[in-house]
Image 1 (cartoon, rainbow, N blue to C red):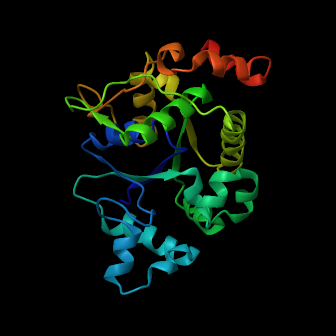
Image 2 (image 1 turned 90 degrees about the horizontal axis):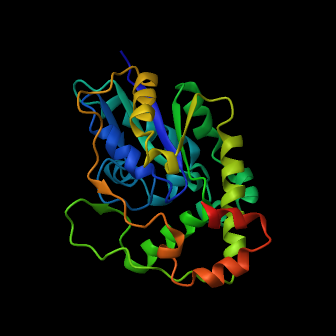
Amino acid sequence: MAPRVFVVFGSQRTGSTLIATRLNSHPHIACYGEVLLPAVPREPSLRGWLAERGYPRYVRVVPAVRRSFLDWLVDSQQEPGVQAIGLKLMYDQISLVPKISYNVPPVGRILNDVGMLRWLRSHNALIIHTLRRNHLKTVVSHARAAHTNEYHRRGGSQSPSGAPIALALPGLKARLKRIELAERVARQAIKGMPTIEVWYDDYVGSQRVDVDKRICAELGQDLPVGGLQSPLVKVSSDNLREAISNYDEVAALLAGTRFEVFLES
């Protein structure tokens, strides 16, 4: 029987890696990382697949090549006992020009890899859409990762503490608006596909087990005894006053805008 196909779909800093690692702890589920990136730390990857076949790297933007790789990934990388197989897919990775799609989501929509979206539909892929209600916390997480070069923390690691981060005020409202637009464009791209929306704000709280059960059920699996596990731990404080060193300046900038609500949650 062919494995159930799924993707963990979202923008950066919305919990996609947390969910992917937890799904990977299930004995019958395999979830690969961002295999379409031009450089990835481990195989399988589109880059490695092209190299093995002697193809130049630039053909990775050819839709038919990307679909052939995904077919290979699903058909040839299935380990014994695996009944659901998936990968992480960031918003900009469904675009043939990721940089434009990241910076200008509405323009990026016309650059979407329509062939990949058709591939997902033809495989009835489950879309596990990771989102974050508080977009200001997404910006804080981005800023912390860029400052410390620590994008994920594993339990027991001797990593820098979650010290407050100063946010750059110029362009902050534009960044928050871009996150809104990216979510809107992404929802339109996956419209009509089987989708589970996972809100990071809830997932790191009391709803994790319920969400895990729902995802496993959609993938035709039971939740293992002891639940799903991940080595990743949370870094930033949920209290924005503690997380942002120039909080008062940020609050003054966002006061009276629709983004002011992010200061209260």
